[in-house]
Length: 576
Ligand code: GLA
Image 1: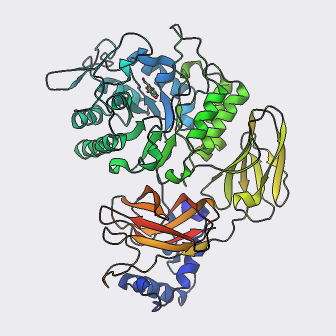
Image 2: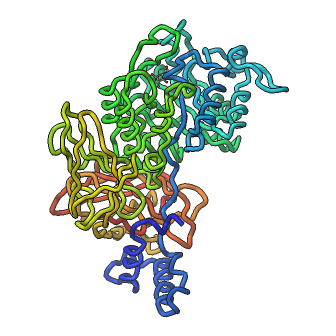
Protein backbone atom coordinates (compact mmCIF):
# COMPACT_ATOMS: atom_id res chain seq x y z
CA UNK A 1 0.00 0.00 0.00
CA UNK A 2 2.84 2.33 0.83
CA UNK A 3 4.35 2.13 -2.60
CA UNK A 4 1.33 3.77 -4.17
CA UNK A 5 2.20 7.05 -2.49
CA UNK A 6 5.80 7.13 -3.35
CA UNK A 7 7.61 8.70 -6.10
CA UNK A 8 8.91 7.23 -9.28
CA UNK A 9 7.48 3.84 -9.93
CA UNK A 10 6.87 5.59 -13.27
CA UNK A 11 10.47 6.56 -13.65
CA UNK A 12 11.56 3.04 -12.92
CA UNK A 13 9.05 1.50 -15.28
CA UNK A 14 10.11 4.00 -17.94
CA UNK A 15 13.72 3.17 -17.25
CA UNK A 16 13.06 -0.51 -17.70
CA UNK A 17 11.01 0.11 -20.76
CA UNK A 18 13.86 2.02 -22.34
CA UNK A 19 16.01 -1.08 -21.84
CA UNK A 20 13.62 -3.50 -23.46
CA UNK A 21 16.38 -5.21 -25.32
CA UNK A 22 19.66 -6.48 -23.94
CA UNK A 23 21.81 -3.58 -24.90
CA UNK A 24 24.99 -4.84 -26.56
CA UNK A 25 26.69 -1.46 -26.28
CA UNK A 26 26.51 -1.78 -22.53
CA UNK A 27 28.11 -5.14 -21.81
CA UNK A 28 27.79 -4.74 -18.04
CA UNK A 29 24.03 -4.83 -18.36
CA UNK A 30 23.83 -7.96 -20.48
CA UNK A 31 23.37 -10.43 -17.66
CA UNK A 32 21.25 -13.52 -18.01
CA UNK A 33 18.78 -12.56 -15.28
CA UNK A 34 18.41 -9.07 -16.63
CA UNK A 35 17.35 -10.45 -19.99
CA UNK A 36 14.70 -12.64 -18.40
CA UNK A 37 13.20 -9.66 -16.59
CA UNK A 38 13.21 -7.56 -19.72
CA UNK A 39 11.66 -10.32 -21.78
CA UNK A 40 8.84 -10.59 -19.27
CA UNK A 41 8.32 -6.87 -19.38
CA UNK A 42 8.13 -7.01 -23.17
CA UNK A 43 5.67 -9.85 -23.12
CA UNK A 44 3.50 -7.95 -20.67
CA UNK A 45 3.20 -4.89 -22.84
CA UNK A 46 1.62 -7.11 -25.47
CA UNK A 47 -1.02 -8.54 -23.18
CA UNK A 48 -4.19 -6.88 -21.96
CA UNK A 49 -3.13 -3.82 -20.12
CA UNK A 50 -3.95 -3.97 -16.43
CA UNK A 51 -3.95 -7.76 -16.33
CA UNK A 52 -0.21 -7.83 -16.57
CA UNK A 53 1.49 -8.12 -13.19
CA UNK A 54 3.07 -4.73 -13.86
CA UNK A 55 2.66 -3.72 -10.22
CA UNK A 56 5.05 -6.47 -9.27
CA UNK A 57 7.88 -4.74 -11.08
CA UNK A 58 7.18 -1.45 -9.35
CA UNK A 59 9.63 -0.90 -6.57
CA UNK A 60 8.24 -0.96 -3.07
CA UNK A 61 9.41 1.56 -0.50
CA UNK A 62 11.19 -0.54 2.10
CA UNK A 63 10.05 -0.11 5.65
CA UNK A 64 12.96 0.96 7.80
CA UNK A 65 13.01 1.05 11.58
CA UNK A 66 11.66 4.46 12.67
CA UNK A 67 13.30 6.67 15.28
CA UNK A 68 12.49 5.30 18.76
CA UNK A 69 9.84 7.13 20.82
CA UNK A 70 9.74 6.86 24.59
CA UNK A 71 11.03 8.13 27.92
CA UNK A 72 14.34 7.92 29.80
CA UNK A 73 14.86 8.09 33.55
CA UNK A 74 18.04 10.21 33.44
CA UNK A 75 16.95 13.84 33.10
CA UNK A 76 14.37 13.85 35.90
CA UNK A 77 15.51 11.04 38.22
CA UNK A 78 19.27 10.78 37.71
CA UNK A 79 20.65 7.86 39.75
CA UNK A 80 17.59 7.79 42.05
CA UNK A 81 15.88 5.53 39.50
CA UNK A 82 14.23 2.39 40.93
CA UNK A 83 11.29 0.09 40.22
CA UNK A 84 8.78 2.50 41.75
CA UNK A 85 9.93 5.39 39.54
CA UNK A 86 9.81 3.20 36.46
CA UNK A 87 6.35 1.80 37.22
CA UNK A 88 4.96 5.30 37.84
CA UNK A 89 6.42 6.61 34.61
CA UNK A 90 5.24 3.60 32.59
CA UNK A 91 1.73 4.04 33.95
CA UNK A 92 1.86 7.76 33.14
CA UNK A 93 2.94 6.98 29.57
CA UNK A 94 -0.27 5.00 29.18
CA UNK A 95 -2.70 7.27 31.09
CA UNK A 96 -1.39 10.49 29.48
CA UNK A 97 -2.21 9.24 25.99
CA UNK A 98 1.47 9.15 24.99
CA UNK A 99 1.38 5.41 24.36
CA UNK A 100 -1.58 5.88 22.05
CA UNK A 101 0.38 8.54 20.15
CA UNK A 102 3.26 6.09 19.56
CA UNK A 103 5.59 6.41 22.56
CA UNK A 104 6.66 2.95 23.66
CA UNK A 105 10.14 2.74 25.23
CA UNK A 106 10.52 3.06 29.00
CA UNK A 107 14.29 3.37 29.36
CA UNK A 108 16.21 2.87 32.59
CA UNK A 109 19.38 4.97 32.51
CA UNK A 110 22.37 5.17 34.87
CA UNK A 111 21.85 4.33 38.54
CA UNK A 112 20.07 0.98 38.26
CA UNK A 113 23.27 -0.99 38.88
CA UNK A 114 26.07 -0.09 41.29
CA UNK A 115 28.82 -2.20 39.70
CA UNK A 116 28.52 -5.43 41.71
CA UNK A 117 28.92 -8.88 40.12
CA UNK A 118 28.72 -12.41 41.56
CA UNK A 119 31.57 -14.92 41.40
CA UNK A 120 30.52 -15.89 37.83
CA UNK A 121 30.60 -12.28 36.72
CA UNK A 122 26.82 -11.92 36.56
CA UNK A 123 25.40 -8.46 37.30
CA UNK A 124 23.95 -8.19 40.82
CA UNK A 125 21.44 -5.42 41.56
CA UNK A 126 20.01 -4.00 44.79
CA UNK A 127 17.01 -6.16 45.59
CA UNK A 128 15.31 -3.33 47.53
CA UNK A 129 15.43 -0.99 44.55
CA UNK A 130 14.29 -3.81 42.22
CA UNK A 131 11.96 -6.00 44.30
CA UNK A 132 9.57 -8.74 43.27
CA UNK A 133 6.54 -7.07 41.66
CA UNK A 134 4.26 -10.06 41.23
CA UNK A 135 3.66 -13.42 42.83
CA UNK A 136 6.46 -15.93 42.19
CA UNK A 137 9.07 -13.31 41.25
CA UNK A 138 12.48 -12.98 42.93
CA UNK A 139 13.79 -9.69 44.32
CA UNK A 140 16.83 -8.37 42.43
CA UNK A 141 15.71 -9.87 39.12
CA UNK A 142 15.47 -7.20 36.42
CA UNK A 143 13.03 -9.32 34.43
CA UNK A 144 10.41 -8.28 37.03
CA UNK A 145 10.35 -4.68 35.86
CA UNK A 146 10.51 -5.78 32.23
CA UNK A 147 7.40 -7.93 32.74
CA UNK A 148 5.64 -4.97 34.32
CA UNK A 149 6.51 -2.68 31.40
CA UNK A 150 5.56 -5.32 28.82
CA UNK A 151 2.32 -5.90 30.71
CA UNK A 152 1.31 -2.34 29.81
CA UNK A 153 2.07 -2.99 26.14
CA UNK A 154 5.30 -0.95 26.32
CA UNK A 155 8.96 -1.77 25.65
CA UNK A 156 11.81 -1.72 28.15
CA UNK A 157 15.27 -0.16 27.87
CA UNK A 158 18.41 -0.70 29.92
CA UNK A 159 21.79 1.04 30.18
CA UNK A 160 25.47 0.20 30.56
CA UNK A 161 28.89 1.56 29.64
CA UNK A 162 31.38 0.29 27.05
CA UNK A 163 34.23 0.72 29.53
CA UNK A 164 35.07 -1.08 32.73
CA UNK A 165 33.51 1.62 34.89
CA UNK A 166 30.47 3.66 33.95
CA UNK A 167 29.41 7.26 34.54
CA UNK A 168 28.55 6.44 38.16
CA UNK A 169 32.25 7.02 38.91
CA UNK A 170 31.37 10.71 38.28
CA UNK A 171 28.00 10.77 40.06
CA UNK A 172 25.47 13.52 39.63
CA UNK A 173 23.95 12.65 43.02
CA UNK A 174 25.19 10.44 45.86
CA UNK A 175 28.40 8.41 46.26
CA UNK A 176 30.73 7.20 43.50
CA UNK A 177 30.41 3.65 42.23
CA UNK A 178 33.01 1.94 40.08
CA UNK A 179 32.91 -1.14 37.76
CA UNK A 180 29.39 -0.41 36.49
CA UNK A 181 30.50 -0.94 32.88
CA UNK A 182 30.47 -3.97 30.60
CA UNK A 183 34.07 -4.10 29.33
CA UNK A 184 35.33 -7.67 29.67
CA UNK A 185 31.72 -8.88 29.96
CA UNK A 186 30.17 -7.91 26.63
CA UNK A 187 28.94 -11.43 25.78
CA UNK A 188 27.62 -12.05 29.25
CA UNK A 189 25.94 -8.68 29.86
CA UNK A 190 24.19 -8.25 26.52
CA UNK A 191 22.97 -11.84 26.68
CA UNK A 192 21.70 -11.07 30.18
CA UNK A 193 19.85 -7.95 28.99
CA UNK A 194 18.20 -9.97 26.21
CA UNK A 195 17.33 -12.80 28.62
CA UNK A 196 15.77 -10.35 31.06
CA UNK A 197 13.62 -9.32 28.09
CA UNK A 198 14.87 -5.79 27.46
CA UNK A 199 14.18 -4.32 24.02
CA UNK A 200 16.63 -1.42 23.99
CA UNK A 201 20.12 -0.81 25.33
CA UNK A 202 21.98 2.47 25.69
CA UNK A 203 25.75 2.06 25.90
CA UNK A 204 27.53 5.05 27.44
CA UNK A 205 31.17 5.98 27.08
CA UNK A 206 32.43 7.33 30.46
CA UNK A 207 34.65 4.28 31.04
CA UNK A 208 35.67 4.00 27.40
CA UNK A 209 36.68 7.64 27.41
CA UNK A 210 38.61 7.38 30.68
CA UNK A 211 40.53 4.32 29.44
CA UNK A 212 41.15 5.87 26.03
CA UNK A 213 39.43 3.04 24.16
CA UNK A 214 38.52 3.29 20.47
CA UNK A 215 34.72 3.70 20.29
CA UNK A 216 34.48 2.35 16.74
CA UNK A 217 36.17 -0.87 17.90
CA UNK A 218 34.30 -1.27 21.20
CA UNK A 219 30.88 -0.41 19.81
CA UNK A 220 31.39 -2.85 16.91
CA UNK A 221 32.29 -5.59 19.37
CA UNK A 222 29.19 -4.78 21.42
CA UNK A 223 27.06 -4.77 18.26
CA UNK A 224 28.24 -8.31 17.50
CA UNK A 225 27.47 -9.34 21.10
CA UNK A 226 23.96 -7.91 20.67
CA UNK A 227 23.46 -9.96 17.50
CA UNK A 228 24.72 -13.13 19.20
CA UNK A 229 22.39 -12.48 22.14
CA UNK A 230 19.53 -12.16 19.66
CA UNK A 231 20.52 -15.40 17.96
CA UNK A 232 20.45 -17.19 21.31
CA UNK A 233 17.31 -15.64 22.84
CA UNK A 234 15.35 -14.52 19.77
CA UNK A 235 15.14 -11.14 21.49
CA UNK A 236 16.27 -7.99 19.67
CA UNK A 237 17.94 -5.09 21.49
CA UNK A 238 17.67 -1.70 19.80
CA UNK A 239 21.20 -0.28 19.91
CA UNK A 240 21.84 3.22 21.28
CA UNK A 241 25.44 4.42 21.49
CA UNK A 242 26.50 7.47 23.46
CA UNK A 243 30.01 8.89 23.04
CA UNK A 244 28.64 12.45 22.68
CA UNK A 245 29.88 12.94 19.12
CA UNK A 246 33.50 13.19 20.28
CA UNK A 247 34.78 10.78 17.62
CA UNK A 248 32.41 11.68 14.76
CA UNK A 249 30.21 8.59 15.18
CA UNK A 250 28.17 9.53 12.10
CA UNK A 251 31.21 8.36 10.09
CA UNK A 252 31.27 4.86 11.62
CA UNK A 253 28.07 4.21 13.60
CA UNK A 254 25.65 3.30 10.76
CA UNK A 255 25.70 -0.49 10.52
CA UNK A 256 28.27 -0.88 13.30
CA UNK A 257 28.71 -4.51 14.39
CA UNK A 258 26.09 -5.49 11.77
CA UNK A 259 23.19 -4.20 13.89
CA UNK A 260 20.28 -3.41 11.56
CA UNK A 261 19.00 -0.26 13.34
CA UNK A 262 20.73 2.09 15.73
CA UNK A 263 21.06 5.61 17.07
CA UNK A 264 24.23 7.45 18.11
CA UNK A 265 24.59 10.55 20.25
CA UNK A 266 26.05 13.52 18.44
CA UNK A 267 26.68 15.88 21.38
CA UNK A 268 26.78 16.22 25.16
CA UNK A 269 23.70 16.44 27.38
CA UNK A 270 21.34 19.39 26.84
CA UNK A 271 20.93 19.69 30.60
CA UNK A 272 22.23 17.84 33.67
CA UNK A 273 19.48 16.08 35.64
CA UNK A 274 16.88 18.11 37.50
CA UNK A 275 15.58 15.87 40.29
CA UNK A 276 12.75 17.26 42.41
CA UNK A 277 13.69 17.54 46.08
CA UNK A 278 17.41 16.92 45.49
CA UNK A 279 20.42 19.20 45.15
CA UNK A 280 20.56 20.99 41.77
CA UNK A 281 16.74 20.94 41.62
CA UNK A 282 16.98 24.55 40.39
CA UNK A 283 18.87 23.58 37.21
CA UNK A 284 17.24 24.71 34.01
CA UNK A 285 17.43 23.66 30.38
CA UNK A 286 18.21 26.51 28.00
CA UNK A 287 16.90 27.29 24.54
CA UNK A 288 20.47 27.96 23.37
CA UNK A 289 21.62 24.57 24.67
CA UNK A 290 18.77 22.79 22.90
CA UNK A 291 19.52 24.63 19.62
CA UNK A 292 23.20 23.77 19.90
CA UNK A 293 22.38 20.06 20.28
CA UNK A 294 20.08 20.29 17.27
CA UNK A 295 22.88 21.83 15.17
CA UNK A 296 25.42 19.23 16.26
CA UNK A 297 22.98 16.44 15.37
CA UNK A 298 22.69 17.28 11.68
CA UNK A 299 24.54 14.66 9.61
CA UNK A 300 22.06 13.77 6.87
CA UNK A 301 24.52 11.63 4.94
CA UNK A 302 24.56 9.13 7.84
CA UNK A 303 20.83 9.08 8.55
CA UNK A 304 19.07 6.50 6.39
CA UNK A 305 17.73 2.96 6.35
CA UNK A 306 17.03 2.86 10.13
CA UNK A 307 20.13 4.68 11.42
CA UNK A 308 19.64 7.97 13.24
CA UNK A 309 21.65 10.83 14.69
CA UNK A 310 20.68 11.38 18.34
CA UNK A 311 20.86 14.97 19.61
CA UNK A 312 19.95 13.80 23.17
CA UNK A 313 16.79 13.20 25.15
CA UNK A 314 14.23 15.96 24.85
CA UNK A 315 14.06 18.60 27.58
CA UNK A 316 10.48 19.48 26.63
CA UNK A 317 8.50 19.68 29.86
CA UNK A 318 11.56 20.26 32.04
CA UNK A 319 12.18 23.61 33.72
CA UNK A 320 13.66 26.27 31.47
CA UNK A 321 11.82 26.51 28.15
CA UNK A 322 8.77 28.66 27.37
CA UNK A 323 5.74 27.21 25.60
CA UNK A 324 6.89 28.59 22.23
CA UNK A 325 10.40 27.24 22.81
CA UNK A 326 9.00 23.81 23.66
CA UNK A 327 7.07 23.89 20.37
CA UNK A 328 10.24 24.86 18.48
CA UNK A 329 12.11 22.05 20.27
CA UNK A 330 9.48 19.50 19.20
CA UNK A 331 9.53 20.87 15.64
CA UNK A 332 13.33 20.57 15.46
CA UNK A 333 13.36 16.99 16.77
CA UNK A 334 10.56 16.15 14.32
CA UNK A 335 12.26 17.51 11.19
CA UNK A 336 15.61 16.02 12.16
CA UNK A 337 14.02 12.59 12.57
CA UNK A 338 15.61 12.45 16.02
CA UNK A 339 14.74 9.80 18.60
CA UNK A 340 11.85 11.21 20.63
CA UNK A 341 12.96 10.14 24.09
CA UNK A 342 11.32 12.41 26.66
CA UNK A 343 13.37 13.31 29.75
CA UNK A 344 10.62 15.02 31.75
CA UNK A 345 8.65 13.49 34.62
CA UNK A 346 5.68 12.12 32.65
CA UNK A 347 3.39 12.22 35.68
CA UNK A 348 3.72 16.02 35.77
CA UNK A 349 3.17 16.98 32.14
CA UNK A 350 0.45 19.59 31.60
CA UNK A 351 -2.23 19.06 28.93
CA UNK A 352 -0.47 21.71 26.88
CA UNK A 353 2.87 19.89 26.94
CA UNK A 354 1.16 16.60 26.19
CA UNK A 355 -0.51 18.23 23.21
CA UNK A 356 2.93 19.25 21.92
CA UNK A 357 4.32 15.75 22.41
CA UNK A 358 1.42 13.96 20.76
CA UNK A 359 0.39 16.08 17.74
CA UNK A 360 -0.11 13.42 15.02
CA UNK A 361 0.93 15.62 12.08
CA UNK A 362 4.22 16.49 13.79
CA UNK A 363 4.91 12.92 14.91
CA UNK A 364 4.24 11.73 11.35
CA UNK A 365 7.08 13.97 10.16
CA UNK A 366 9.43 12.48 12.73
CA UNK A 367 8.35 8.93 11.91
CA UNK A 368 8.20 9.35 8.13
CA UNK A 369 8.97 6.02 6.41
CA UNK A 370 11.73 7.46 4.21
CA UNK A 371 13.74 7.91 7.44
CA UNK A 372 15.69 10.98 6.24
CA UNK A 373 16.94 14.03 8.09
CA UNK A 374 16.21 17.70 7.40
CA UNK A 375 18.80 19.73 5.52
CA UNK A 376 19.28 23.49 5.80
CA UNK A 377 18.34 24.67 2.30
CA UNK A 378 18.60 28.43 2.78
CA UNK A 379 19.78 31.07 5.24
CA UNK A 380 18.89 34.38 3.61
CA UNK A 381 20.33 36.31 6.57
CA UNK A 382 22.28 35.10 9.60
CA UNK A 383 19.90 33.25 11.93
CA UNK A 384 17.01 33.13 9.43
CA UNK A 385 16.99 29.51 8.36
CA UNK A 386 14.92 27.31 6.08
CA UNK A 387 15.12 23.57 6.79
CA UNK A 388 13.57 20.87 4.62
CA UNK A 389 12.97 17.20 5.44
CA UNK A 390 12.06 15.17 2.34
CA UNK A 391 9.12 12.91 3.11
CA UNK A 392 8.21 9.60 1.53
CA UNK A 393 5.05 10.90 -0.13
CA UNK A 394 5.68 12.23 -3.64
CA UNK A 395 6.29 15.99 -3.62
CA UNK A 396 6.05 16.25 0.19
CA UNK A 397 8.48 18.15 2.40
CA UNK A 398 8.35 19.14 6.06
CA UNK A 399 9.72 22.67 6.18
CA UNK A 400 10.84 24.65 9.19
CA UNK A 401 11.19 28.43 9.00
CA UNK A 402 13.41 29.13 11.99
CA UNK A 403 14.08 32.63 13.26
CA UNK A 404 17.10 32.54 15.57
CA UNK A 405 17.45 36.32 15.61
CA UNK A 406 16.25 38.68 18.35
CA UNK A 407 13.47 40.33 16.32
CA UNK A 408 10.38 39.33 14.35
CA UNK A 409 11.27 38.78 10.70
CA UNK A 410 9.64 37.82 7.41
CA UNK A 411 10.89 34.44 6.20
CA UNK A 412 10.34 32.86 2.79
CA UNK A 413 10.73 29.41 1.40
CA UNK A 414 11.38 29.07 -2.33
CA UNK A 415 9.96 25.95 -3.93
CA UNK A 416 13.17 25.69 -5.96
CA UNK A 417 15.10 25.25 -2.68
CA UNK A 418 12.85 22.27 -1.94
CA UNK A 419 13.60 20.80 -5.40
CA UNK A 420 9.93 21.28 -6.32
CA UNK A 421 8.64 22.65 -9.59
CA UNK A 422 6.93 26.01 -9.90
CA UNK A 423 3.23 25.23 -9.58
CA UNK A 424 0.73 25.91 -6.85
CA UNK A 425 1.77 23.82 -3.82
CA UNK A 426 -0.49 22.78 -0.97
CA UNK A 427 0.92 24.26 2.23
CA UNK A 428 -0.42 23.43 5.69
CA UNK A 429 0.71 24.69 9.08
CA UNK A 430 1.89 21.46 10.71
CA UNK A 431 0.78 22.55 14.18
CA UNK A 432 -2.60 24.20 13.50
CA UNK A 433 -3.67 22.33 10.35
CA UNK A 434 -4.46 25.69 8.73
CA UNK A 435 -4.21 25.77 4.90
CA UNK A 436 -1.89 28.60 3.89
CA UNK A 437 -1.90 30.74 0.77
CA UNK A 438 1.30 30.74 -1.20
CA UNK A 439 2.61 31.96 -4.52
CA UNK A 440 3.55 29.55 -7.31
CA UNK A 441 7.20 29.69 -6.45
CA UNK A 442 7.38 30.64 -2.77
CA UNK A 443 5.66 31.14 0.55
CA UNK A 444 6.39 34.01 2.94
CA UNK A 445 5.31 34.58 6.52
CA UNK A 446 6.45 36.51 9.59
CA UNK A 447 8.16 34.49 12.27
CA UNK A 448 8.52 35.82 15.82
CA UNK A 449 11.96 36.17 17.41
CA UNK A 450 13.26 32.81 18.63
CA UNK A 451 10.28 31.03 17.10
CA UNK A 452 9.61 28.80 14.11
CA UNK A 453 6.85 27.89 11.67
CA UNK A 454 6.55 24.28 10.68
CA UNK A 455 4.94 23.65 7.30
CA UNK A 456 3.86 20.63 5.33
CA UNK A 457 4.42 21.38 1.67
CA UNK A 458 3.11 19.17 -1.11
CA UNK A 459 4.11 20.22 -4.61
CA UNK A 460 5.31 18.74 -7.88
CA UNK A 461 8.59 16.88 -7.91
CA UNK A 462 11.20 17.83 -10.45
CA UNK A 463 11.98 15.05 -12.91
CA UNK A 464 14.48 12.50 -11.70
CA UNK A 465 17.56 11.49 -13.63
CA UNK A 466 18.29 7.80 -13.49
CA UNK A 467 21.74 6.19 -13.51
CA UNK A 468 22.65 2.57 -14.03
CA UNK A 469 25.76 0.86 -12.69
CA UNK A 470 28.95 1.25 -14.68
CA UNK A 471 30.09 -1.94 -16.39
CA UNK A 472 32.20 -4.02 -14.03
CA UNK A 473 35.78 -4.05 -15.24
CA UNK A 474 37.19 -7.54 -15.57
CA UNK A 475 34.10 -9.22 -14.19
CA UNK A 476 33.43 -12.80 -15.19
CA UNK A 477 30.58 -13.17 -17.64
CA UNK A 478 28.39 -14.78 -14.98
CA UNK A 479 28.63 -11.87 -12.55
CA UNK A 480 25.17 -10.48 -12.10
CA UNK A 481 25.03 -6.83 -13.13
CA UNK A 482 24.63 -4.52 -10.16
CA UNK A 483 25.56 -7.22 -7.64
CA UNK A 484 27.74 -5.69 -4.94
CA UNK A 485 30.39 -8.28 -4.15
CA UNK A 486 33.66 -8.22 -2.27
CA UNK A 487 35.58 -8.57 -5.52
CA UNK A 488 33.36 -6.15 -7.42
CA UNK A 489 32.16 -2.87 -6.04
CA UNK A 490 29.26 -1.38 -8.02
CA UNK A 491 29.85 2.15 -9.28
CA UNK A 492 27.67 4.88 -10.68
CA UNK A 493 29.63 7.46 -12.66
CA UNK A 494 29.16 11.00 -14.03
CA UNK A 495 26.38 11.64 -11.52
CA UNK A 496 25.39 15.30 -11.71
CA UNK A 497 25.64 17.18 -8.43
CA UNK A 498 24.50 20.57 -7.24
CA UNK A 499 27.32 21.13 -4.77
CA UNK A 500 25.24 20.22 -1.73
CA UNK A 501 23.22 17.51 -0.05
CA UNK A 502 21.06 15.62 -2.54
CA UNK A 503 18.36 13.02 -2.13
CA UNK A 504 19.13 9.74 -3.85
CA UNK A 505 16.68 6.97 -4.56
CA UNK A 506 18.15 3.48 -4.77
CA UNK A 507 16.33 0.66 -6.54
CA UNK A 508 17.72 -2.74 -5.60
CA UNK A 509 16.96 -6.38 -4.98
CA UNK A 510 17.78 -8.41 -1.91
CA UNK A 511 16.30 -11.88 -2.43
CA UNK A 512 17.47 -13.07 1.02
CA UNK A 513 15.48 -13.27 4.23
CA UNK A 514 18.08 -11.10 5.93
CA UNK A 515 19.36 -7.57 5.51
CA UNK A 516 22.30 -7.11 3.16
CA UNK A 517 24.72 -4.21 3.54
CA UNK A 518 26.82 -2.02 1.27
CA UNK A 519 29.26 0.76 2.05
CA UNK A 520 28.85 3.93 -0.01
CA UNK A 521 31.70 6.32 -0.79
CA UNK A 522 31.18 9.44 -2.86
CA UNK A 523 34.25 10.50 -4.86
CA UNK A 524 36.38 8.29 -2.61
CA UNK A 525 35.45 10.38 0.44
CA UNK A 526 33.84 9.33 3.71
CA UNK A 527 31.75 6.20 3.94
CA UNK A 528 28.39 5.17 5.25
CA UNK A 529 26.96 1.68 5.57
CA UNK A 530 23.49 1.32 4.10
CA UNK A 531 21.12 -1.47 5.15
CA UNK A 532 19.13 -3.12 2.34
CA UNK A 533 16.16 -5.03 3.81
CA UNK A 534 14.85 -8.15 2.02
CA UNK A 535 12.85 -7.13 -1.03
CA UNK A 536 11.79 -10.55 -2.26
CA UNK A 537 12.60 -11.58 -5.81
CA UNK A 538 9.47 -10.53 -7.65
CA UNK A 539 9.60 -6.86 -6.87
CA UNK A 540 12.54 -4.53 -6.38
CA UNK A 541 12.93 -2.52 -3.22
CA UNK A 542 13.37 1.25 -2.98
CA UNK A 543 15.31 3.24 -0.42
CA UNK A 544 16.16 6.90 0.03
CA UNK A 545 19.48 8.27 1.23
CA UNK A 546 21.11 11.70 1.08
CA UNK A 547 24.68 12.44 0.02
CA UNK A 548 26.77 15.49 -0.71
CA UNK A 549 27.53 15.69 -4.42
CA UNK A 550 29.93 18.16 -6.00
CA UNK A 551 29.04 20.39 -8.92
CA UNK A 552 31.77 19.39 -11.38
CA UNK A 553 32.11 18.97 -15.13
CA UNK A 554 32.93 15.31 -14.80
CA UNK A 555 30.19 14.51 -12.30
CA UNK A 556 30.44 12.39 -9.17
CA UNK A 557 31.43 8.78 -8.62
CA UNK A 558 29.30 6.74 -6.21
CA UNK A 559 30.96 3.53 -5.12
CA UNK A 560 29.06 0.75 -3.32
CA UNK A 561 31.27 -1.96 -1.83
CA UNK A 562 31.02 -4.72 0.74
CA UNK A 563 33.33 -6.74 2.98
CA UNK A 564 30.75 -9.39 3.33
CA UNK A 565 29.27 -11.28 0.37
CA UNK A 566 26.71 -11.02 -0.95
CA UNK A 567 25.73 -7.37 -0.96
CA UNK A 568 22.53 -6.06 -2.55
CA UNK A 569 21.88 -6.15 -6.29
CA UNK A 570 21.66 -2.53 -7.37
CA UNK A 571 19.40 -1.73 -10.29
CA UNK A 572 19.73 2.05 -10.44
CA UNK A 573 19.99 5.30 -8.55
CA UNK A 574 17.91 8.39 -9.34
CA UNK A 575 18.37 12.02 -8.38
CA UNK A 576 16.58 15.26 -9.12
C1 GLA B 1 26.05 10.60 30.06
C2 GLA B 1 24.93 10.58 29.03
C3 GLA B 1 23.61 10.90 29.67
C4 GLA B 1 23.33 9.95 30.83
C5 GLA B 1 24.46 10.05 31.81
C6 GLA B 1 24.37 9.06 32.93
O1 GLA B 1 26.33 11.89 30.45
O2 GLA B 1 25.23 11.50 28.03
O3 GLA B 1 22.58 10.82 28.71
O4 GLA B 1 23.19 8.65 30.34
O5 GLA B 1 25.70 9.81 31.18
O6 GLA B 1 25.40 9.28 33.81
